[in-house]
Length: 214
Length: 188
Image 1: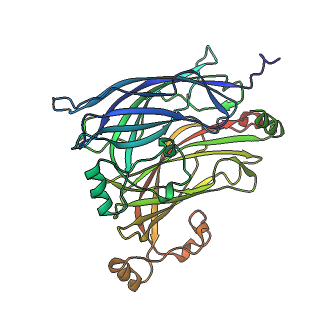
Image 2: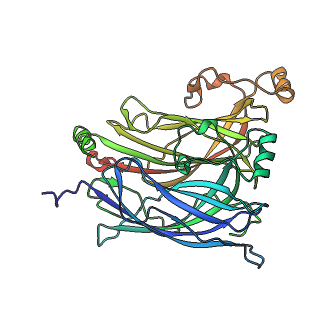
Image 3: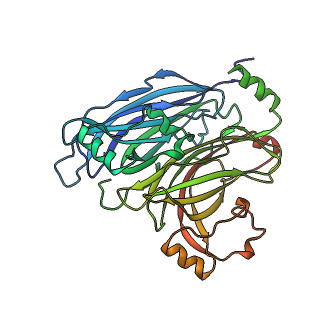
């Protein structure tokens, strides 16, 4: 009877942190982690990772490429708390200290669509995530933090994935990170969930302003 | 997970809607340090099971381009007994200057999409104009008229009294998951 009506559905996410566009910064590395609700639990794969340090290419594109793999599977009883991936990008400042260059977060895409043959459904998505840094509260603090190499940063990057407590923060958005996702779900249809039609084009999210390499 | 199963047993008769997405940001406003106060209004047949119904985003000053990015997550779980009062998201965009003073830049609302899947939404905004004196004062000193009651943002009842000007556009990406709608013969 348990096999006939499942109570748990699975969400498998794989893909990569593909590249970044930060016009004013170079030599960057990226950390990612997943934030999810209480009803979710990772069952396989890695929830967090740190990428290599990348420099801008010497050609006209000036591209920052990580090509950093993501591979994780979650199980859940409830779509509330759908996983979000939180990205933090760091790089060196003028004095050589490691400072934060941006935080960003985006929900893992749903897996829309259905095939005629099987209950599992799959689709591919590209997401461009804007990255922002907290701002200093005064010009003096801005100069001091630039001089000492200790910029304002979040004690826990996971706060970027939450809505509460953000109203007191002031930030500056200064770059974008592009992610590619492939998403497969299992048993969502059996539990009665309708995730919508397939999105086979796969490009979504804000497009960076003109003039930046894509 | 056990308490969740018990709660879901009581709700098996109701259809459920999950709204999962982000308020991405805003473009087209004259000021650059912007934040947004948002809320969701639903009819009487809807019950919010999980999630926060309202909130306020961070204040963003964009360095590249003119789009202010908030990336504010929205995760709401509703149960409903009827289609009336489909959820509406109402927004107020404010700007903050270097002294910390806040000024209203626009009001806007949009309905949560009614078909499952991911949707990109562009919500236009407007702001009340006031008399010529108030407009002059706003240009020099800041401030300007605001609505006394927030429900004029999403209801059409008393709008005929207002004279407004256009603000910028708020961009949202909302994903919708529906559950058990087919049991009730609802097509979306």
